[in-house]
Image (tube, rainbow, N blue to C red):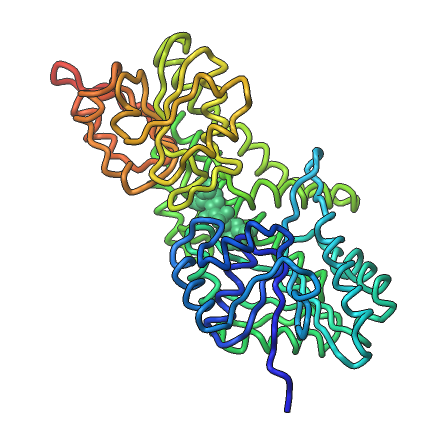
Amino acid sequence: MPKQPLVTVVGSSFVGLTTALALAQNGIRCRLLDTDAAKVGTIQGGKAPFEEPGVHAALRRHLKSGRVSATASIEDGYRGATHVMICVGTPPQWDGAQDLRFIKAVARSIGEEIHGRKRGDYLTVIVKSTVVPGTTMGLVREEVETASGRKAGRDFGLASTPEFLKEGTALKDALHPDRVVVGGIDKRSTDEVLKLFKWAKAPVVRTDPTTAETVKYAANAFLATKVSFANEFANYCAQIGVDWYTVADAIGHDDRIGRRFLNAGVGFGGSCFPKDLQAITVAAQRAGRPLAIAQAALDINGRQPSEVTRVLLQELGGLERKRVAVLGLAFKPGTDDVRESRALEIVAEVLEGGAEATGFDPLVKDQFSKALALQHRANFTRAERMEDAIAGADAVVVQTEAEEFRALKPALVKRKARHALVVDGRRILDPVAFSRAGVDYWGVGIGMVRAVRRGKRRT
Ligand code: UGA
């Protein structure tokens, strides 16, 4: 009888834990292996080490069903596994290139495990971490082969299967993937990975490891480019008195273009787009074929938060002794993740201009202040409620499209703020309602809509 799969998932952060839960939900046994014993303890106690809808409940369910377990012991971690899925982090180095040291260490430990197994006790090594093209066939293969003394393809399986999860909907995305991309070194490796995803109602792309790795970068680079394209056009639209959002809706009807990811804003953040674009542009540069469009998307993104400071300077006549309220501290709504959040850039620019900043986010706690540069922490205060952040502010900046901010009423700004100015960095508020209520409104992709004073509205 064929062996039932037992998947060791190395790395129990966002991708590892979510993937394990999706597999467990579909009847596959998974064992999380993480060298961080505190994290393992948290998971064993039924709590995920991050906030993500549905994850805590699914974790408790599958700890109980026995389909998910967690360990910090390498020896226990690999015992009896049929597959090992590498889900560890690939952080950026100082120059944006990818730091593959965790991948290397895990590949080596897998090699040692294979070395200790009898020949024929086949293990499929799967790379799920986002790694630059060539990593699975290069570094991973070499490390596992050297440490095991065995050969990839002949003695063990090797494949890459990138993930496409979004923060805030990770478990849902994992359970309902758009596509399953598997690049195996040979047919057996690809088949072994596909065994784990038989349940997925999604198109399957069978390919080689380097192509699979490239799919991940091309997807993220394309989406990030769409956002930067929207931001660049939105800035131009505001300049000539055109509303980008009307333009985006109109072009979005063309299904070759599509409306999604055309929302202009203060730029993209998070743990993926900025880091992945940097890694792939450095990799392409090194390969002698620079990716000019991906580089431009990054450059535009780097400049976009300054649109906010430009408006504040223009409207407030300087930032000295002013107070700016920032609504939304995470990189997007529905998460407490502040990595590469545009709020960090906006707050830093505002503080450098001599102002103070107060921030509010329904999910973010002290991690935002900790992510600020040391010299900025004293002049930033986090408020527990939206109205406390707005109280006494000279300007209110909307940085994410959280539901709570969509419901922001002009009356609250008029009542609480020192100066009735709203800078809508995500275009979620109604410019007309704000200007009619006597609030100066600036929105990305539309520009300034002045408060109606003495019955007249000036734009
Ligand atoms: C992104 C991709 O969407 C996932 O498919 C991918 O798996 C993931 O990266 C990853 O590589 O792990 P995520 O970073 O969670 O997912 O967030 P997105 O919802 O894609 O948003 C990224 C950034 O783009 C956010 O800052 C968001 O505010 C911004 N954005 C998005 C816009 O400014 N405008 C838009 O129209 C859409």
